[in-house]
Every structure is written in C-alpha cells, then in structure tokens.
Image (cartoon, rainbow, N blue to C red; front, top):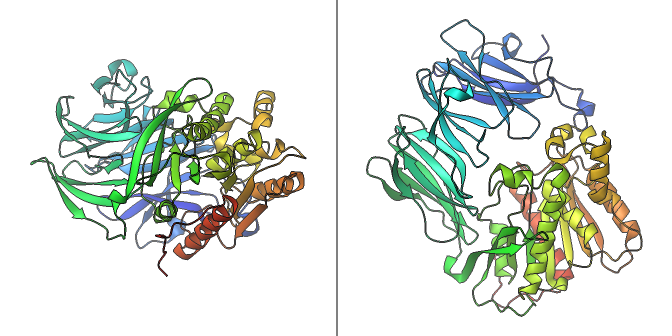
Length: 530
C-alpha cells in the first residue's frame, strides 16, 4: 500500500507500549506541498519494530473525505476512543473500539450536534464533557449500551449564568472543572455524582490552567500566568487539597511595576465585551500613550491573559497592551462564538473597532498612537478593520492573515474554515464575504494608516499569496504618506515551531515599525540588554 507520509500526527500509545496510533493524510507530490488540498485522513496503528508499509488502517471513511480523525486509549486500556470531526467547528462524533474484541468500532455519539470530550470511564459507563444541548457546557454520564440522549445523566449541569465550562478532567476519582467567568478561570472539584468538594483560584488578573491527568493520580500540576507574570508551575496534592510551587522561572521582571486589569466596553450593538489592559503603573490618561490593540475573534478560541517576553518589552517601552475578547471566541460559550461567525462575522469587526474607540474615548490613547495587531484569523480581523475604518488607527500589523475571502478555501486546508466563514461558491456566502474581504474592500485614493504585513514563504496554513495580494493592492491604493510594508520570512511557515532567533528578529522589526510610525519616545529607563 502507499506509505501514509502526508501530514502525519501521532495520537496515542498502546498501554503495553507495543506501538502507537497515528493519523495521516495521503502523500502528495512534493512540488504541490504548499498548495495541495488535503483530504482523506485515516487512522493507523504502527507496531514497533515493523515497517511502516505493514501499518494497519484502524479507521477510515472514504465516503467522507472531509472528515478528520484522532484517537486515544482509555486509562483502563480497554477502549480506543475515536473522535470524528468535520472542518474546524468544535462538533464531533465519537466511536468506541473495544480492544478486547474483534468487533468493529461502534458509535457512542453518532451526530455532529455538539462537542464531546471523553473524560474517563468506569467499565461501560463514560463520563463526558459536552456542549450538546448546553452551549456553555455540562458533564454527563453515558452508558455505552444506552447512548441515546434520553438516557444521559447530568453530573455537572450547565450554569444558569454566563459561566462556561472551559476544561474538564477526571483525576484522583474526582472531576476537575475549569469554569471560565468573564474570560478568567476558577477550578472547582466535584465527586463523580456532582457534589461540590473544593475550589482553586488565584489572586490577580491572570490565567489559571492545567489540572489534566489520569484517574489514578494523587496530585496534579497547574500554572498561573498574566501579562506581567511568567507562568509559575504548581503541584496540587489532591488528598490534602494543598498547592506548592513546583517550578518558577527566573525572568528579569517585577510584576509590581505593571498594572493588569479587566474592563468592559459596549460594542456597536450594545453588547458588553471584556478587554484586558496591561501597562506600567502610573500611566496618565491623557490620550498620548502608544497602544497596541490585539484581537483574534474566531473559531471558538478564547483570549486570556498570558506572559510574553516580547510583549513585556512593549510594556517597558511605555506602551499599553490591550486584548479584546471579541465575539467569535469562546469567552461565553458557543453562543458567543455563533454571534461572530458566518453571517454574523461583522460583529467581530464591530467589537474590535469599538475597543479602539473606547481606548480613545477613555483617554488611554488617540488615533495617531493606536495600533492594531492580529495573526491568521486575527490577520483577517486587522485587514477588515483597517479597510473599514482607516481613519481610526495610526498603524496596523496583520500577520499571516486570511485576506482573500473569495478564494481562501481553494488552497491547502482552507476548505475547513467554511464553518466559520461560509464559502463564495454559494450566492449567500459570496454576498456575505465580499462585504468584508480585506483584499476586495481596499478603495483606491484612500489614506490608509502605516501598515506592516507579515507572512512566511512556506506557510501552508494561510498561503502567503493572501498577504502578497493584499500588500500590492494596498500599496497601489494608498493616497496618504504612511508606508505600506511587507516582511516575508524565508524558510518559515505559519508561525508554530519558528526558531527563537527568527521570532526575536520579527518582533524587533515590529517594535521598530511602531516606534517610528506612532512617534514613540522611549522612556529613559528603557535599556534593553544585549
């Protein structure tokens, strides 16, 4: 059989260590690696010490080439849990393969009606975190012999308010539930019948994350971080309910030198949107502060506080760093996501524009000092807002952005994004996409702000043609004096795995661009070390 060498990903190991399960797309011609459309994923098992050519296909659906698969083995080693997905939307089907039986995999959840995460099992009883019938999440118990919804039992029901179950795990015979409350996390423990046991929370505005493990674990690790605080790793003793610091990075930063807070602002339609702000203490609200506004707003991905050495440099330079939690994300569950995708995508841009207007209105900054930044789907965000409100911003940095919304689905895995974007192949999709596609909404003779467009020449996620076409068209249309520049990283892709030296060089160019075009005066205390 042909070797499964195209886009391979290891999923899980057999419990006896005899081999591992992996997923792979069919191989494509090397000359088409950056543009070929990838479909027809399969699950395989590779036995250690055997040739790849003898690997067994564990699961495939040749009649559904758009479906994706990944799997894991349950802690008791009995079942292979096979997740089936379609596109990037967080809806999946789940099949179970009894590894003690020759019978084929059987469905546990056979509809794409929600996201299903298997937390663990007691024999045939499975504990599942899902948003099916609960857009903000719940935990249920399901007997695999009676998987029909009428037989499901609520263990942790959906919250009555806007709180969202962000993560869930089964460890130490208890359920660890990460509740997301206005984009900030609190972790609560429950027994397997849903009785509340205890809570773990941290002081300050930051992100509490982790609490993943196995059923037999006696302790668990978690981290806490913020824009001014490098991630500190804690060990949590499940029996004693006590936390101790396990690892603390040594970074030359004094958290007390900076202020981090969460604010809320109204969007165009009155929706209340959270936003995080970080800046040096003693900031004067006089409208003169250089401000970098970041956003993403898509694919059910929440934005939460996190540490970045590069962003710390921006704060030390005297800049304000703002992160808007836009619709299209998961800050308030599936309903928040649904309010910012497909036909409602314009809400995301309205939220971001409203964030900029709020920062100006509250005297944090002013148009000449306000820059916007985002990557990938966030690059689309910046491109759309740049073309819709060019007079609002002093600078813009769209990174590896999806700029041609009429053809994005024709390259590599772009077709998977239709769950968030729609497709120009339909009249409804075309009519919606043409309204905000950054490439197609550039207007000749317009004064656009200084713009710095970045991409990688080997980006096979968002092919660099998006950025190239946007750059050329924007340069041609520019009627003002501000520069329209592009930075193309060679031998680099979408960003993941980029060498540290390249990341530093790119961010240094970004900061230099903003210093120049926002008219920044660096504080005398700013003294970057060589």
